[in-house]
Length: 101
Image 1 (cartoon, helix red, strand yellow):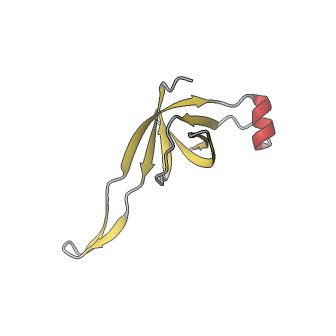
Image 2 (cartoon, one colour):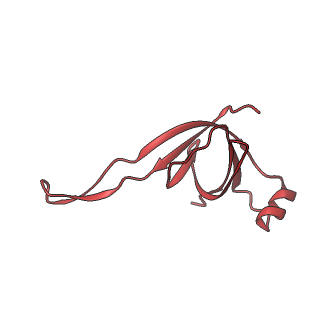
Image 3 (cartoon, helix red, strand yellow):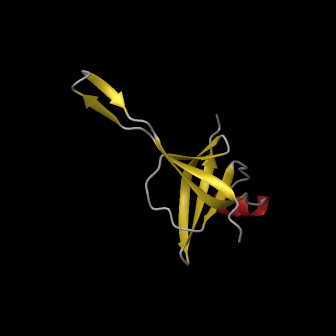
């Protein structure tokens, strides 16, 4: 399997109070880029796994397991959110749902 696609895991900035400034500040979001293989489920698999024909779901195959927490993923310029994951033989399969906005 070739891992020719790129996924960016984004962990949003955290808010904390800065006593020097006297206000709440937000840190910059952290991003981590990884190689992966992205596939879209067929209509039959989408109906079987998700219960309907949602086309905004994708399946991401990771060569190395990504264990850090993240808020969302970026693929291209589109935002995707976590649905479920499975680890098979030191490889990770992540199902993501696309943002509808």
